[in-house]
Length: 73
Image (cartoon, rainbow, N blue to C red; front, top):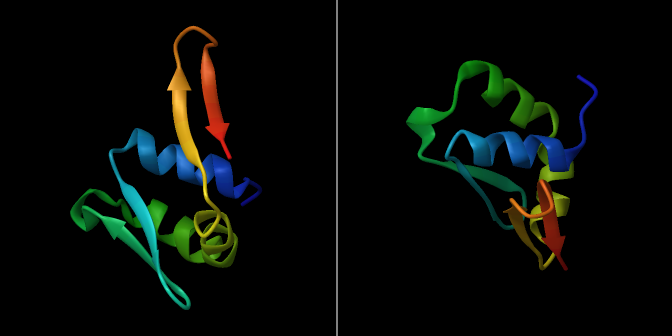
């Protein structure tokens, strides 16, 4: 597994999942029934990095004009 936390967050978003943090160290996934076993394993592997990312103030959106995902921090 050699992905960034941002790539994992993007993949979850593409699948219609919302990742969130319940402090201090719980990563939540909604709706959980849409999370594949493969993605669940990936989320466990990247949990600490995802929690660090999700505790930062930002908004992630896809820009059709730019043809990519942009972040407002």
